[in-house]
Length: 382
Image (cartoon, rainbow, N blue to C red; front, side, top):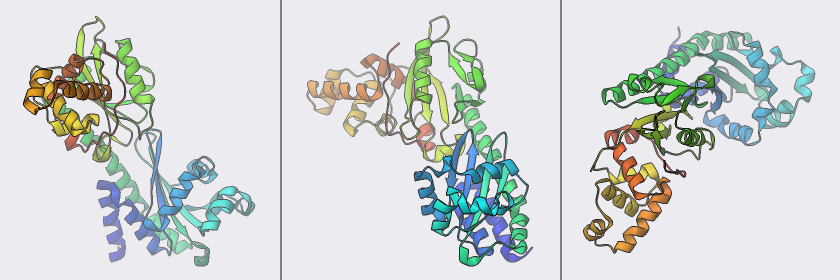
C-alpha cells in the first residue's frame, strides 16, 4: 500500500469515529482521481442527510434548495443497481438519457459536473451511504486505473460506515445504562419514532404505562398524554422540535410521573441520531434546587424568568421571591405568567411538579449531551 493510499485509509477510519471528517475524505479521494469534490448521502431511519467538501457544497445546497432530490433518477437507479463497486452514470443511463434528462441537462452540466463515480454502502438494517466523486468536462471520463483506486479503498469505506453505526449504538446503550444506574426509565426513539433502545427500568413500565404500537413504536395508556406525545414526535419539523414535559398516568389512572421528551440537538445527534428523541420518565421530588441557566436553555426562558423558575422549584412563594429579588410581587407574577406560557403549563403547581422531576437528570444529561433547546410547545394539564 502506497503512503498516499495509507494516509487516505487512515482518514476514512477517522471519519468513522468523527463524522465531520467525511468531507475531507471525499476531497482526498477526489484529488487522487483528478476530481472536483463529491458528496456523501446517508439514508438512516428513513431520513436522508448529506455532506460535501467545500468545492461542491454550494452545488449540493442548490440541489437541496431546488428540490432536485425528488427528481433525481440517478440515485434511484444507483440503488437499484447496487453493485459492490464504484460505477459511472453510463453504467445505468444510455447516451440519449444523459442528453435529455433534466438532472443532467438542467442541473449537473450547467455546473460543470460532467462525470460521476459513485457507490452504495449498505449499513445495518435499511441504512445506506452513497459516496460520489465528481469531475469536470475538461478532465474527461474516469479511466480504469482511477476506478481501480476508488474500488481499492471501498472496503475501508464500508468498514468505517459499519464502525460508525456500531459506535453510535454503543453510545446509545451506554447512555441507557447510565440512566439505569440512576434508576431513571429511559428510551431512545429514531427519526421515525421507532424504539431503538431502552433500559430495564423503562421495560418494567410495559403494560403499566406504555404499550407496543405498530411499526416498532410505543403508545401511552394515558390517552391525553399519548396525544401530546404524538404531537411532540410527529407534529413539528426537526427545526421546530423542542422539549416537552408531559404529566402521565398509569392504566389505573394513578399519576406515574413526568415524561420528558428531549429531541437530539447538536452533539446529541451523534449519540441518538439526527431527528432522534430521548424519552425520560422522572418523578417529582420536593424542594429541589435547579440550575437557572439550565432551565433557561431547556425551556427558552429569559434570564429573569429562569431565575424565578429556579426559585419556584425550591418551593418559594411569590411573596418570598419578590422579597429576595427586590422585585414587586406583580412583576414576579407577570414573569411567572410568561414562563408558564413558554413551558406549556396552565398552573404554577404543575410547573413546580415538572421541575421537581428534573432534579435527578439535571444538568449533565441535557447540557452534557449538547442539547440546545430553542422553542417549547403548549401543554395541557392532566
